[in-house]
Amino acid sequence: MEQTATMNSWAALAYLVSGVCFILALRGLSSPTSSQRGNRFGMIGMGIAVVTTLLTHVPVQSLGLVLNGPTGPIAQTGPLFARVDLVTIAEILAAIAIGAVIGLVIARRIAMTAMPQLVAAFHSLVGLAAVLVGVAAYLNPQAFGIADLVIPLIGEPFAVIHPASKVEMGLGVAIGAITFSGSVIAFLKLNGNMGGKPILLPMRHAINLSVLLAILILITQFAHTQLAWPFWALLALSFAIGFLLIIPIGGADMPVVVSMLNSYSGWAAAAMGFTLHNSAMIITGALVGSSGAILSYIMCRAMNRSFLSVIAGGFGAEAGSGAGGEVIDRPWKRGSAEDAAFLMSQAEQVIIVPGYGMAVAQAQHVLREMADKLKEEGVRVKYAIHPVAGRMPGHMNVLLAEANVPYDEVFELEDINGELAQTDVAFVIGANDVTNPAAKTDKTSPIYGMPVLDVEKAKTVLFVKRSMGGVGYAGVDNEVFYRDNTMMLLADAKKMVEEIVKALG
View 1 (cartoon, rainbow, N blue to C red):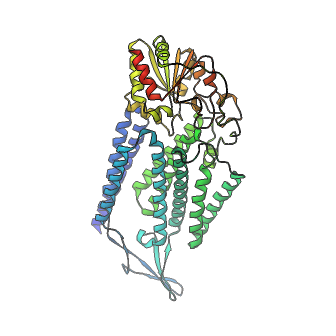
View 2 (view 1 turned 90 degrees about the vertical axis):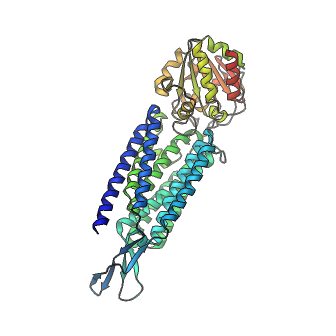
View 3 (view 1 turned 30 degrees about the horizontal axis):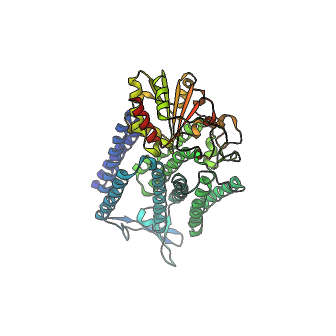
């Protein structure tokens, strides 16, 4: 008994250290300059948590039996019924090894352009894991130590799940199912299997509200009765509401969706941490959930969106009746790599605006080379990053960091937007929606109200785009293409920048 108490004390201390590492990891990830250190803290914290969990793994634990007499419980026995684990340490280590190999292979092979959909896929797995843990806990609560086995005078023995555990289980299953199905839709949209345009269902808000209310009622019913039908019904409705919440959200708002799903996965993990009596999962889940929610709130403010409408689903979709997908038939000017090189070499300042097109072309390295050439000519070079450029929060920052772009040259929208009017050249490479003035002027546009980079105010706009036939991820054509101060550079982004570098000599 004394040895078990000592082990529990050391485990609690180890989980506390693990939690501190996770907090330091989040702090480190808040800045590009400290992100690598933050990643190291995160890995150390997770390693401590995993090792501690394995060391405190007990093959068999006793579960007391409550014997009912005519007037109530009359005795509680010792280990007449045992909690037996279904897997051994060797099997757990084998599963960890398989997962580690799969993760390593994916990490080495995944392209940066596919990182957003990979994140969405991982979120779905976290949600599914929470659901499976909840289902396992419901089907075999004795194995999780969350139930008392009641032996009535007449009839078969049965397990009574603790009331708090039923609430935790219901919430964990519901949030996990929403995370899973919502992340699947996000993955399909980001991967191009579904269109980026919002899919608007009639009376969707009323339907969503009704389903969410029904889920809360079913959790309450399950907590009071422990019947099977409320549990399975809330699981089915939770899967359904995940689809319903994400389907109406358009492609331009996907970065906010990814961060919100990240928050959901954290809360699901925290709820399952209570079920498993694992403080590390509770701490980690709460950190991920709260940080994801804060990030979503910050991004909503940056996009002029309502935070509550993110949770409700379909935010910004009412404006989707505009001219999305239509290409404006107006005259435009086409330029060459030589034209671009001459204009930028004669400029005092060039502001580069990267977007998803740069990521698709993997042009970040040659883009940095172009910037180095310009700086050799005495040109001041800065990078302007929109909060939702790309397909997930920080997507462009990660790409530029991969190309070793100096951190002091990278600026967020609110810090650099005022400089565009005094800039000689705005070099836009694969960014459409985040530079579209329709967000400021067209109330029928699906991106209306979203702050954008005012590239049209620069003296010259060089816009790198594959062709004039396509539109942005939100399905909206960009008026900047047809302005007098805009020169279109139509080609693959990487190939065009390589030609510009050659022209710069």
